Structure formats: C-alpha cells, structure tokens
Image (cartoon, rainbow, N blue to C red; front, side, top):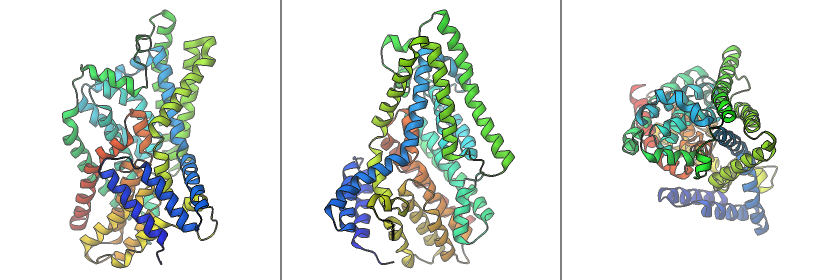
Amino acid sequence: MELTISHWLYGAFTLIIIITMVFRRGVVLPTLLGTFIIAWVYKGSIVDGFTAIFNANLVAAKELFNIFLIITFMLALLNSLRDLGADRRMIQPIEKVMVNGHISFFVLIGVTYVISLFFWPTPAVPLICALLVPAAVRAGLPAITAAVAVALAGQGMALSSDYIVQVAPGLSASSAGIDQGLVADQALILSLITGIIAISLAYVFYRKNIRDKNDPANDEELKTLQNTKESEETSEPSEDTHLTKWSKTFAVLVPIALLAVVIYMMYEKLVSGRMSGLEGGDGAAFVGGVAVILLLLSTVAFGKQRALDYISNHITDGFVFAFRAMGPVIPIAGFFFLGSSDFAGEILGVEENVPALLFDLVESTQAFLPQSALLAALSVLVIGIITGLDGSGFSGLPLTGALAASLETSSIDASTLAAIGQMGSIWTGGGTLVAWSSLIAIAGFCGVSVMELVRKNFLPVMIGLVITTIIAVFFL
C-alpha cells in the first residue's frame, strides 16, 4: 500500500490530537482543522475541504444520535419521576445493599458486567445509570468514580471478551483463519485479567475521593446527576395524597418494568442461543421505548391536564443536557470517521476507491513488525489500540486478526495474538479510552465530563493491557 500525503497528514493530526489529550486540552480545534486540510489535500479543492467539515460532523451526528436520544429519554423519565418524588423511593431498597461508597463501587461493577455480557453495554448503561448510579452517589461514591466503574466493567471487561454474543471473537477468528472458540476462550481470560487489574488500580487511585454516606456533597452531586434545579420547589416533592400514591406506584413500576426488559432480553438470548436482535443498538432502542412509555404515564400521573406541556419540557431539557454535555464529541468523531472506509466516502463525496486513511497507516507498518513473541504481541496490542481510535472497537478486528495469523510463531499462537489485538481495539474504542465512542452515554447519564472520564480510565486501562499482554506471552 503506497501512502499519500493525505495519509501522512492524517497520521500527523492524529498524533497532535493524542498529544493534546495527554496535556488535558480541548481537541475540537485540531480535529476540525485536520478534517478540512486532509479533505482539501485529498480532493485537491478548497471547496471540497469546506464541504467535508460539514459532512464529517453530519455523519458523526447521525451515527451518535441514538446515544443522544436514549440519554434524552432516560433523563426525561428521571426528571418526571423526580416530580412525583418516586426517584428517592425507587432507590431506597438499593441503598440497603449500597451501604457505603466502597461497596457501591463493586456492586456497580458486578451488575454492569453481567448485564453487559449478555446484551453489550449499549442497552445496559441506561438501566444501570437509572437505577444504581443514583443509589451509589447517595451512598458516597462520586459520580465520576461511578462512571469509571460502569465503563471498566461494561465497555471494557464485558465487551472485550464478548463471550456470550461472540461477534468480536467471530471477526477476529475469521480474519485469522482459526476456530472462533479458541479466540473466544483466550479473549475471556485476557479480558478478566485486564479488567481485574484496571478495576483494582482504579479503586486504589480514586478510593480517597469516596465520601461518607452523610456527606452533603452527595445530595449536591445527585442534583447534577439528575439535571435538577437547585430550588426548594423542585428538590422537595409535594406531600399531598395524590402525589404520594403515584410516587409509591412509580417507585415500584419503573424498576419492575426495567427488570422485565432485562429478563425478556435474557430469555430471548438463552432460548435463541444466538443474536436475538435485542443486543447492542436494538436493545438500546427497546429500553428507550419502554422509558418513553413510562415517561408518558408518570407525566400524566403528575400533571393530568398539564401533562401535554410537562412532557415537552422534560424532553426539551433532556435534549439540551445531552447536547450541552456531548456536543463537542461530534467533530472529534467526524475526524476519526474520516479515517475509516465505512464513512470516508460519504464525508469526501466519493463512491469508488474510498480511502481508509487510518487503517492504511496501520497496515503499512506490518512489514516492520518484529518476530519476537513479546514484541509481536505488544505490536498487535498497539495496532489494536490505534484502530480503536475510530470509536467503534470492532472495525479494527479484521486487521488485528489478519496480523495475528501472519505473526504466529512457535512461541505464541494466532488465537492468543488475535485475542490481544481484540483487547486493544475494544478496550480503546468500545470504549474506555476514546470520548467519541459509546462512552459518552455513560458520561451523560452520570453528569460528568466525557474527557475527564477518559483521563480517569487511561492509566488503569493501559497498565492492565500491557500487563495482560505480558502474561499472555509467558503464561498462556
């Protein structure tokens, strides 16, 4: 593959963006500038450069809008439950288990892992964040630490193995030309090792920030989490008989409805033994649809004839919150979508010979990769991490699988190398390390900065991936 000036420019801007992130500065400016210059050079027209900036943001917005939408509906539901006072009643039973922030941290991890293993994190995140995160925050766990726990357990540990759904092992194995079961088994082991290391490090790093259960800061953070106003009227629900009755009703109805969603999806999965259609995005749509119906019912219960106005206000507030918190991610995603052949054609306005700038750069390094088992494994890990920068986590698996087959030696087999590449790609883009992945949903529901969440995840995840790779080479 012959690299062009566009490839080198894309690589240079990617490096600039990574360095900017390391220095904790905003990366929107270099991503917009990079999209413009690369498109201008590739098409040879400054007009096409201007057009590409708009197209890149439009494509990114279309791809990410489902995440914005489910954030909107779930936040609107939470706000309507707050009107009734059902939000406090709903988490009271959970608070009996989450007696403090430390236990809450590990409860979040356990529940998130199990649900995400069956359905992927996309539909799991709104369920966890609606029911468990508020209880964890009330118990003293900071919202940012709760977001770290959900991300590491779901987007990282569960999705990187994908042991139940097995889409990821299938992609890796088919490209490597080996049995899918071998990759799945290795990926499960490596994901657990990486997850245990990353979660343990995160707990050690951030446990000093965990507060006492009675700390006033817990209630302040809950207001931010639920996007509430700090007025006495909104923070204290009315105590009249009508609202008390509906408050108790919805405090029971909402958890039962969401639990029924989980049971139904689990039933479909276990009965079918394969993709039932309710994993990933379809599962999120199912959860979002149930949330909308619950929103309608709770708004009518609270407002009666004024429900027509109340529901519009809740949905508007949800959209405003989602776009205010997650809006900067769109231009960043647009830049990395430009590097993927899946989206570059639509961004650049080309239908044939669509460029794959990011993957071409990675593929060009194949000839220079070392033959040492350890260095080969670390190289596949790094390439997996780089391909994960597109925010998918799955699109780079065919490349890492093919590399695994070509780098197999007597010291390390292709299934182990493919699993290592899968770890790098999905832990990065699945994602825990890139802000323009589905990680923005976790940040949105937890009311925290997605860039701050990335920074919190970075060190535990990177250390976990490197140690896991070394263990895979010498002990598996």
